[in-house]
Image (tube, rainbow, N blue to C red):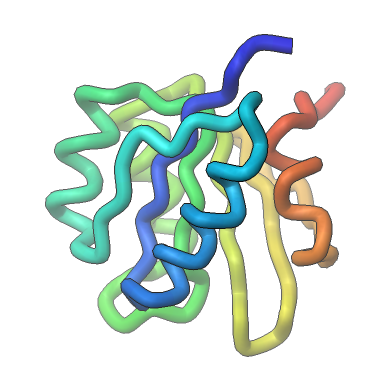
Length: 116
């Protein structure tokens, strides 16, 4: 399996850093960037074209569906993993919504290709 490039777009810097630390433990995952500001994040996503973008479901100023559309506009091949720390849930988007409610399985969702 090839290395998956991951970008973290998350409004809570401490939580984002924790996600980054967790992901860096797996040599098949490479965190290529992290932003807490959506506008700056979109600019970097457009340049980096990550395989996976992790986004915040409940951030002020982030609207999950609109954020997903912007990510797909900037990086059409990216998958999006939306984390919701309030409901302890996760959704995976691959140009279509594929719900997955198991936050404990974040790394598996990053590595897994959704079969259509």
